[in-house]
Amino acid sequence: MSQIVLLLSGPNLNLLGDRAPEVYGAESLDDHVSAAAAMADRCGLAIEHHQSNDEAVLIDRIQQARRRCAAIIINPGAFTHYSWAIHDALAAFEGPVVELHLSNPNAREPWRHTSVISPVATGTIVGFGGHGYELAVEAVARLLAR
Image (cartoon, rainbow, N blue to C red):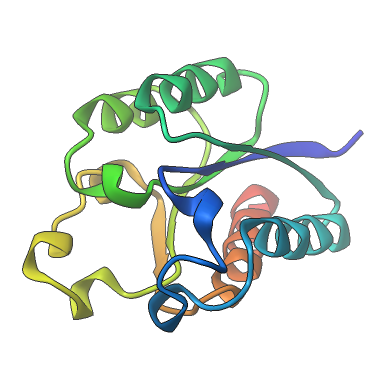
């Protein structure tokens, strides 16, 4: 049985493909999830994806992943910059955590430069657009193989 990687998508990511394509690209969230799932399959992993605009739902998913999922990949959207509750939930997760962003927040508005998620992430992948989803899965696979 494949190890499960929880892929979480935060607020407004359900609008990918329509919202600011010059920043986030023309691909939909479903496109990114499909690419991640295909890479996971090649790496012998399984992707379980959940998107929510609700912070509490994401926290519940993180807590439910404990002792069930091998790793978490999270694109927290705007929660990146202020959700200490998601930070705390991720800190209680035992496996690798990869923070993922389509754009490079450090190259954008100053308020985007701070991530409260990064301190509890194993690593962060930013600025590679949709390819970042495949990179995140590959990173998780390598971490799990150690």
